Length: 125
Image (cartoon, rainbow, N blue to C red; front, side, top):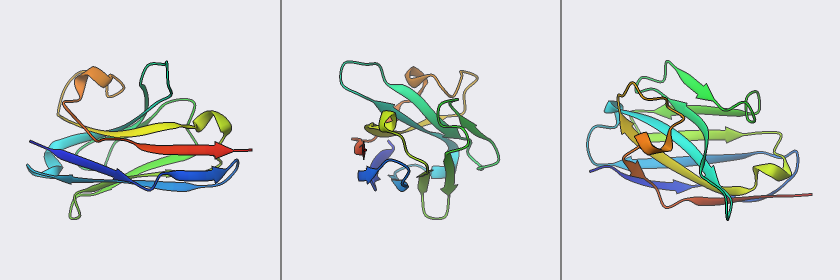
């Protein structure tokens, strides 16, 4: 069973940057597609970004495209989310997730079997 631990969240001013990390343990990391999702209280969990097992394919929700960059280091069993030009509306709890290869859209939260505990990102004005 994959275990995921996020880190790197915090308080940042609008326009600033943060880098989230997600460390994985358990089965071989390179067998999993990794995703980042975010959630604000009272709303559904939204997809942010995903990366395939090799790092060769990346995916971004329209609202973060051009501002966020996902990457992974399979040797370190870690996936990253570099967030730049942060906006107030990026405030949320960010979750890391893992799934085996699937034909289901990478933006589908239900297709991910493993989740981290989340890390809070707060963007202030």
